[in-house]
Length: 192
Image (cartoon, rainbow, N blue to C red; front, side):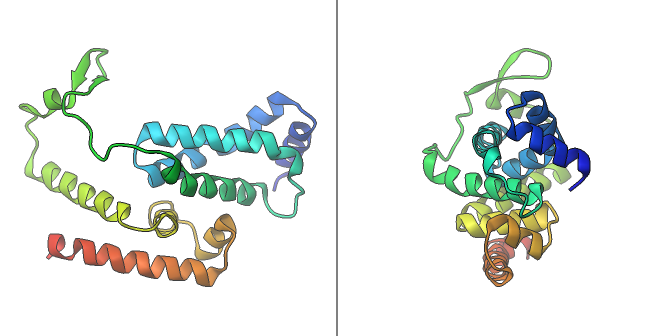
């Protein structure tokens, strides 16, 4: 932890909102990235992000400098991700008629973007693989999904993940082993 980060934490603990905002700025992209990798949707990732920093704001005074701030923050992030799925009751599909704001500012539906989209074979195959990976990830337990996501999509080491998830390295390895097995099993027919 740098001296600057240490000073920001101490100031935030005393109620300095600017210091808290500066502290958030140091980690916001990482937290949002973890949330997106876990949730798979930008809207859900934003909800998780907000919940993480709301919890951090409420409990910053309890941070005792026993670990790195980033470790404490990522532990909160993983806990929010793991509980988010159980709190969110959501349909497993998106309507083709649901409208969204296109880049040009116009309202479009998914059906509009599919008609005449001219996807190349490579794009279609890439999209299909991504869809299969997402489907496989949804079949994992929340802990397995979190470990798999942090290891393979975010590049964290086993030791870092165990600290984030507040469990032993052996437990992380166990989650990762079974997640990898299940993902291989799920993708074997598709990739053969």
